[in-house]
Every structure is written in C-alpha cells, then in structure tokens.
Image 1 (tube, rainbow over the protein chains, first blue to last red):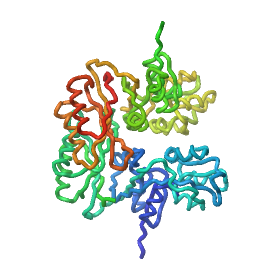
Image 2: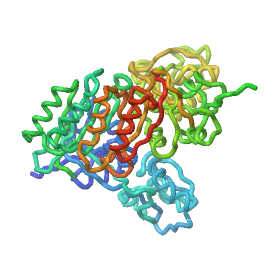
Image 3: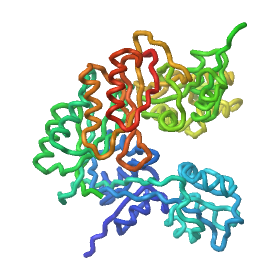
Image 4: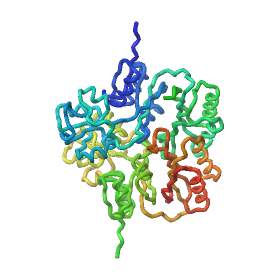
Length: 270
Length: 270
C-alpha cells in the first residue's frame, strides 16, 4: 500500500504558497483562507498545511500569527523561504508593445511600480496573482504579474523575468502539522508569550534568559494581545530544539516569568 | 486677522480618522492615502495631519510606521485614542425587519460577525465605512456599518449602537507636524531604531538602558527593515520628554548602541 501525503495550502492554484507546497508534496489541496488551511490540518483532513508567515518587505502575516496564537494548537513542522520573483505573464506570442493593461494582486503591483511606469502600462488590481493570470487569457493587450507556476497552469508565457523593484524580497512559509519534527541538530524553535501587565522590564528579563545562555534570536515580533492598546504577544524564534536539555530549561524559565506561553514547535532551520 | 488651522486626514469624509480630526481642527482636508496626508504636512500645505497608527485588535498600521521610518521626517505632535464603536446605519424610518443586506469595510464586517449572523442579514464589502453609508441611501432593504459621523454626513439614522463583537477595540491616531510639541510634564516619546546585525543581545542591551533608568515602555513594535528576513526596525514609546535631561541621556546612549536612530517626537500622553 502506498501512503500519499496530503497537503493543504493557501490557494488558489498558481500562488506563491502553491509553489512552496509543490516543493514538499504529493497531493495538494487549495483552501481559500489561512484559517481554513489550519482547520484542515487540525481536523485531520490533511497531513500538512502550508501558509505564509512573514515577508521581508511587508512584514508579518497577521492572520497567521493570530490564528496560531488564539485559534489552533498546531506545530510548526518545517519552514521554507523563497525569493519573491515577479514576472510579466502574457498570452503566447505577445510582445511588449502589445501590452496596455497589467493585472495583479495589489502587493505585486506595488512591488513592480518602476517597471510598470517605465513601460507606460495601466495597472489594475486582482484578488490574487493567480486570478490575474487567469483573467488575461485570450486578450493580447493584457498582461499579468505573478510567478512561474501561474504562467504554467494557464498556458501563458513569461515575457520578462524578475520585474520587481527591490531585492531582498523573500517570504517565509511554515509547514503545519499535528506532530513534532524530530531533532536534526540544526533546529529552530518558535514560541509565543505574553508578559505580566504593569511590571516594567519583563521583556528585558525574558531576553536576558536567552542572553545568559548565549542563544541567538532569529526573530522577534510583537502583536496586539487583543486585550487593549499597549498589551502585546511576543513571537520569538531562536536556535535550538525544544527537546535539548538547555532549551528545555530556557523554556521552563520563560514559563515561570510569563503570563502565557505557547511553544509552536521545533523544526529544521531552512 | 484670524489664523485658521488647516488639518489633513485620511479620508474620505465620515471615516474614524475624520471623527478624530474633527476633535482638534477648524478646517479639514481629506486625502486618500496615508503617505498623501504625510506629504501634505511635509510640504507645508497644512499645519497638521491625522493618521491611524495602531488598533488594539488588528495591530500596527504598517504603512504609517514604514512611511515615518523611511519616507518622511515628521514629528508626532499629539496622540488621540478613540474606541471603535460600530453602528448599524439605515435610511430614516427603516426598521430591523426591513434589512436584508449590510455593507461595510471588511474589517468592520469582521468586527460585527455575531450581530450580522444573529440577524440573518447578508454582508457585503465596501471600500470604507463611509462609502458603505453613501451606497445605501434610498434603499430601505440595505444597511451600512460605520460611525456616527458617517450617518450624520449622509442624513442617515443609527438603528443599533455598538454592534461590534469585542470590547477593547480602540484605535490610536497620531497628529503629525513639522514642529515639536513643548514639554507638558506628562509626555511620551516615540523613537525608531535598528540594531547592528549579527550582534546577539543588542535589543537586550537597549532595553537595559530603559530598565536601569526606571523608564516604562508603553509600546514595542518590530517591523521588517526591508533589508532581509530577520532584520528589524523597532518602534518604542516611553514616558518622558526628549528635552528632559535624563531622557536626553537615554537617547544619546541608545544612539551610541544602534545602527540607526530616529526620534519621532515627544507629545502629551493622551
């Protein structure tokens, strides 16, 4: 009997998340929202779920952080980071001088502002890069901005590669599971915590626990705790596996000094 | 000669930002984006500009933080915090049983989910709460969700007050200027900094500067520095005025230990 790994991802097909899911899986199922992807993992419909968690330009994906903190008890089983390269997608045989209008997600349009204005084409917003690609089929005056996968799916061509304005544009995706990943020796751990209100220097104390153990943080994000302005949840990533003795002690010391602590899992560093 | 204070705000008319601008000003001018509001202040077209900076449920307004950090050298002259109360706005004389459809900004719809489903009405998305109010004029089967100001402007009635699901929903707005606010004795200061890469414990060291001076932080937000994943700008608010001797010393010590420091200003605590 062959066991097939089922993977849910933030759809539709042809998104960057689809590209990432494609790197790891056999059987891919698109869901239309991030909580729906998480629900499919929590409910056991799929083995893994793939969602974006942060982009180097736009910052954290709020709904991913909030859902992990408040709604689901899922484990981060893996992380995957890909460069966000935007491409000009056109109908086969189409040339640059044919293009009058370009369609894409607002973020992709924003990322390609210089290209768009230097070619004097009119930008239009679409729900996703994948939808944009689908919408231009058959009209030679229209182009879309999106990834290679979107062009492939709709039998479109890529007329120009890497048309984004800025370098350093990469997105980190997480693979969610109900189970922990075993230690590999090169791991990261993700935790969420909130500190006691009205105690000055609490965050300083928590960071000191990492400092005295010489553990490097790779991420620190604050999110509103939804209890009022000035009250935060902190999302911290650091090197080490939660089953390692020293990390276990660190987590236990953090637990003693926080109001709320959730370990999101340990997983191989990408 | 009477001097009139010109104030720009994130429009259109009837938004929550309009409500806030109304609290402080004589002559109000709507701009359609947050950078356009900032530009109007920087260019001297207006005396002050009002934009949202954070919401207790949704978190920071990324474009406000990024524009303050990277694009404009403006001062935070004041802060105003208002509760976000959503109301069911209808045509005059309209009753609950007439309503079939409700229109609002996606965030307002999300905030009133329980009310909407318990009354079995169909939600629809609009560009803003103000646009939603305008769009229902004359149709008794339609309602909008928005603030008191929107109802007033379009001569509509409020059928139900405070229909949002959650308490603790408040938004902090900032008033921007080219000039500093003088010390009042009850002030806050906002700064942005980035730490040297690859130096573990740098953030810990910065927080320690506040700790040893017994200065309480009222906010700490991280934003991507746009230089790559894992590199952050930190937005910190704390009690005290930048012209106070102790605060001056703290800022100078932070300056010695950071790669980039920008003081956004000192202003009376709301």
